[in-house]
Image (cartoon, rainbow, N blue to C red; front, side):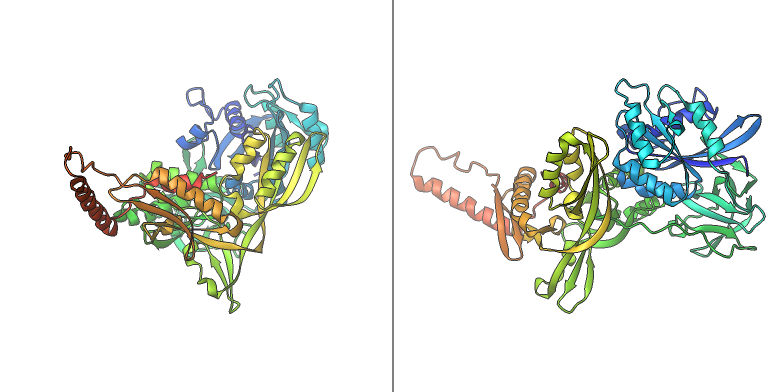
Length: 595
């Protein structure tokens, strides 16, 4: 056990975590030239296309240092705020962390929040100043920021370039010398933490675990503590570039177990694995259930795919424990699921993965956050869906979730960023100059206001320099109304949303004009209306497609033309009463992007 080191790489988005992982794998000889490619650990096409890490990836490296063989277990983590749950799970399986900071951009919001996560778990932090080969690197300035943040010595900061390989030997040296070996008793009862799992259509569910105490042999009878189910360990092994089977794993090891489990509910991330014959007395703590920030309905395009969609979401949940779902039904879209996400990017990625990995065509409704409704009787109801809102006469008041947002930016962009936050009903809490031209602004904002386009606007205002991190703080009373969209007088429940009364007229008008552009013309007039209760606040009309019925009348009395037009008008009126309006999927998506 003295020769094992478990560590993860944490950083803000795009500071070079995956590239650094590539260099470490090359340097330790874990991958050869033939297997080498950029972001070798990012195994999803989606991750490569977007250049972001979505999943944490664990891999084992072997390295001989001063004549002694060492086993280095590395976990590469995502950087985006929507995937911070992945980072917290990776940190729970490690004793140390490489904190990577971009020498051209300095410390950013996600750097700080990931660092706090690591410090809470008592990890040994090794600061790495990456991208030192760039012309616009500011090493001295960024080193000052790191010293202020960590309280470390300047000489402890490793200068590196993941692209060129500069500083990689020093990083390996520091990992071995600074990060403590895992503590644990190999002879105690087995106690292992599941930190991730994937579904394999041939082998069933593969669970990834870290052993804290004891040892596990192939074919041992093991028990998953929270579900109480018992299984045989058909195969155990370590995570190299490809899984490598072993006969025994000891305390401190990170590995995988295959026991032919087919039902996804039986494996929970954060569960403890122990032996049936000699179980451990307590299970590992420190894993809290994730709270979704955002809710949206996901419906199959064709109703008969409902069960298939359920299976797909369950399999996806194995690989992404922060996804939550429950069944719901809609008048417009039939049966589907109300899913909870950590943010808009998370929702976008889940939609893409359903399409690519499970070939599921889905319709997603307008996302909304969770509100608390206090009734006149004093009951407290959680509302995730605007349709579940009680009758307005029974509502005393509605409370909406607020977040504390930390924005780090260059001082020249402070004005526009403050205007953006105040427009979103934000309250300025604090501003601190980190250096002469970098400032940290703290705002209290309603979560419902930032789910749509806040992040995109922040990036464009600050030309990509501002970084943003948030955590939920409290619920506060708000003047909210339910905005319904009516097509031909019929409400489309999938487009309903809860919105602040001051923004409702503007938003309703924009939705109506957007739908007018996107819904194709039918054989009859379609009225698109936005309504609050019985009061219509905006209206657009899509004119009917008409055949030129008067084309055969050339000359003669005007009454001949009028008779034909009247006949057509009656037909259109009758058609309107029985006609159905088809709303394309693009219309649901476009509503999300309304400026």
